[in-house]
Image 1 (cartoon, rainbow, N blue to C red):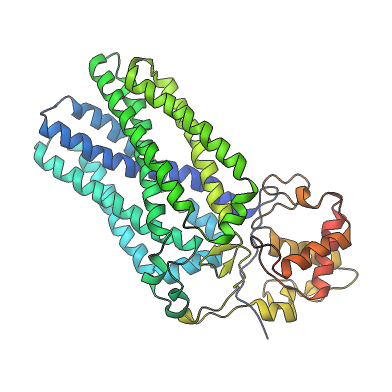
Image 2 (image 1 turned 90 degrees about the horizontal axis):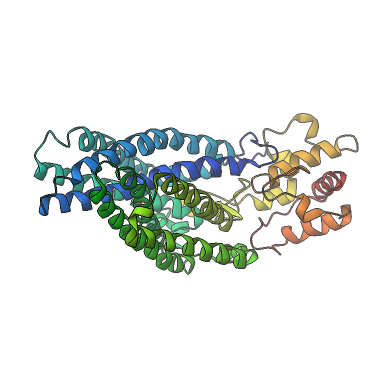
Length: 445
């Protein structure tokens, strides 16, 4: 019996399965990026406090550390597994590819992460109980562990966009998968954003100290403004470098909404430039409520839109440019003993080959055509599109409004022939094309 290694279908109505990971991931990234940026900021502040004998910096560092402990390491530790839970449900073969390629890289990342968790407790609770030189050394190692965690994770995430080198397909080597033109631009882009975010968080804490220590509050707010400005500038520079290292399919997706994305980025840059300038030149104007509101601005305007863009530009792939978003393997990877599933799907169809398709839908008949078409649509399209009339993210209704069955089949044929670089090149038997088209046409978009 011919089967392909599919998993049970996970479908989240209206939003689509992949976007559950995106929502969880955005919250987690805010927390995790804060932790890495704060680790570098901690090292900077501890260095200045020790070298300049600024004992007044330590209470600020302790408050920042408590925020970091609760926000980044509690919320981050909850949402981190949440990402992998939703990702495994929505994209099991994508996660499988990451595990099979990077199991030891991931294990190493966990060593760094455990050190981070222990380190943040030590830095916060022993800040006044150990000598300052020892504390300074601990902040250095804490920062190195945080950046090490980032570097390892970025190599894995960059593989999701495309492998480090073409040699990977022949060798299957983790190093060939890890190191590539995309990895380091991606890492430095994240570091710039993390530095900016550490300053944005720092402004919340420094502004809240105004009643207790107005002079120190103003001084630290200025420093946080400078830190944020430097981080923001790094983010812009490395974003340009990062965009130049992306594959053709990513640029094809980016081209669809390029003008809107650039406009939003310009507006966001201007808003935060003014905010950082206020912190530097008029620190007393930064009220705690204002500083908190800016965190939500960066969450929605920066992180959410940025992560959504990155997820979109990876299409039609979910990992390594050999696994489509709909979990079908699209090319041979001899180094991993993987063969493309496209030829056998074109010959026999998804319904026959997928082991989790109910027996009554294995063969399409006049009686089950609509039901089979709905299942095929979910298997083929739901990782990127919501299928209902009320769909929110990439809804099919926006693409198929007013089209009849033959018009929809024409689009399916074009996709199967590779006419859209950002869509999976997936040929199906005629009966399956017909069933999908009939299902979409029946929705009366």
